[in-house]
Length: 530
Figure: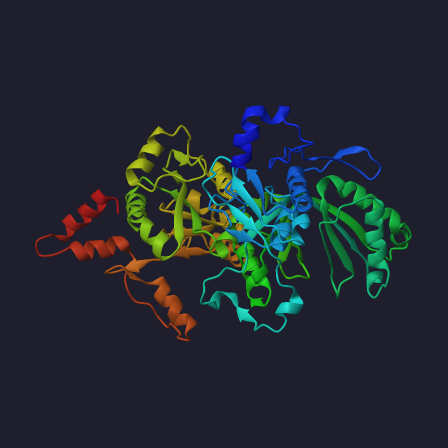
């Protein structure tokens, strides 16, 4: 190429060269545009230029195809939703096509197809960071016939540390369409009629599932086609609906598809379990589940508002990123709150390096003011910084607004640390647990307060994927409740508890001595606010 440019291209330029006599190594070709089978001009839709590039790569027997993007390759997840996402070093053609189908914006779903037969490598690189290698896409994934004789292993037991999935992706603005009725059991042509109705109405079916023991068929479709899909089913099964042999046809909008993709999923135990557990722990409800026959992807449908939380939860569960916990401190300016922040500051690096847990303080409050993080990276874990944020914050303390912020937090793990003894704060425990928000509190306000409220809080904890952690101590800070719980759970029966349950009295007795009269010990307690 350099020789050609120095001899001809440099002097004559691209426009003055006689292309009929010369064969320059550079071709400039438009992409994205095309014609249909009738010769009518059309486009190749999203990322159609990628498809054009691989088509010409195939026709010209290219040694490689490079797609220049504004990202460092194909990422493990959408970095706008999962800040911890990182570029994937390599993918197989099949994995890339699965990721593209399920919404990976950087690739066209069909772009890999022209390169497969000749095994032409496809590089995805960053035009603003050309020194970075990006992602290389080449080779076919093993099919089920090839791996059928392989030993089935638990993926977490792998000695190589290899993660079975390559990426997590999603399709927004989806809808569910359901058909259910007792007469469907054993029906031989119901699924055929169902899909024929979708085909006739030109509906794109993203996912489909049919229960073997239930009379139901459920599909996921693009939200803008949901109304048309519902009308098509009502028309196709009009007679059955009139006779009540089909119970109902329904549609639910505001959904999203979340999928994990990777050839390592085949013949590995526990991959789907990890996927589902991550969603459950993040309080994300699953509306539909489907697995591809190739075992390279598992997809679920969730509420659209939970998509970001679902993506981050799954990304963390497969150790693709550090487990981030969104923390909200209530009572940050008190002695207990400030001491807690100091401890978090001291332990922050240890938690991240040794336990793979990142603490992100997204909110802090006093009795009159509160500060919420607006950057998505949390407040700095520093006592002085947080106290300064609270002093300068224009926001008044509002538990309803704090609850809304916690509910909108996309971190899969959210926890409120209540450093107060406020009855008003205690009234929100039930609501927080119901939203899947964990609670840690040293206060006895709820645990030893109104019995009806205590029962409601316990019931909310049992019903939801959230925990309420509390403790009390005596003497040399010895834990009482944990010890008592362990005794009961191992079969012991507690007949009687003897001792002083008053922290104030314990402090008085501890400080009272020959040099400190009892009256002075009580006065010290009053001065300290005990």
